[in-house]
Length: 409
Image 1 (tube, rainbow, N blue to C red):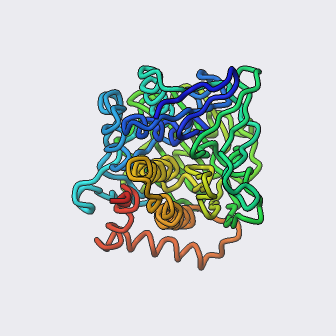
Image 2 (image 1 turned 30 degrees about the vertical axis):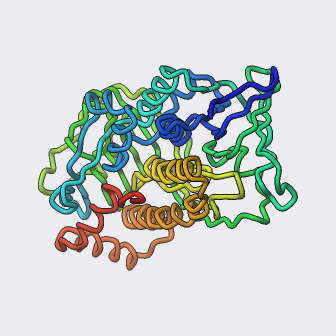
């Protein structure tokens, strides 16, 4: 099937994709490679989309999928493979070695911003429809109780002009605040949510990382994470109270606090290399899931269906797992007419989603200092961290979840 124009402002395609984040762009690649036409609608302009700062830890399976769709060349050249993480707590440190605990799996540090750039370049190089500044206003005919037998229709404005896209299926990859999920009446959705009593102050600094792998630190002063964007750019995080204004944290205070939270008795003189800070922002922490992920011919993927706190580095990777499962379901339907995989899409994805939600929640609760914590609860945290350092099984559980659970066979 080919995308065809039926009127000046009305277009038909097989799959309409709302949102040009990693989920929407990767789904478009998977469908294109399978010979299924689709149109991607993105409300922002290309420059904005390519500059959105997001997570940068790719699971082994995510790396494999990006390579398979042809988006791995620059990632393999510029990304930073990591074979472990370091845990710091009680002024001591312990390294978790991923390959030895997972049968060889590892992760890749490669910013989501760069993943999006690579996927956009692929999409445009093949002249597959990708419309920027296409703001979706409504999704109709997706198959609700009052819409039986209707055709899914997306109403949008492209560069200010009204337009309509009809399709066989609509996929919402437009995030938590997107139109797709909200097109479904709240009475048909179940929502599960936890808001955490702290946030992250994220800092981007033009300085080479003073460490080879990520450092996750539990401290009486609060959580800290030492990460990186590249060999010349550090990405650093501090636990702060909700509602914190980044202006309250001048550069010197940031560096001093990071040094204090990352300190160990084994190397008391260790400090981060300091450099120019180019960005600061505060990131609230939440866990959130909506069920189901399919409503007739409307399907949700990525942040439109679930959000995790960043502690476990699962957000982008969950989106990839969603669209891999969805692409396989759509290919089965396209080739055979069977909707067996589409019918199982929500259940298939939610099984993995809830495991990732649990891991992200557990890592968050384990490493952060909750203002409501008693000394008893703090001792429980330290006990569990100590167990991870002494038990191969406990360390393997962390490593297997961090490097990523297997995707649908």
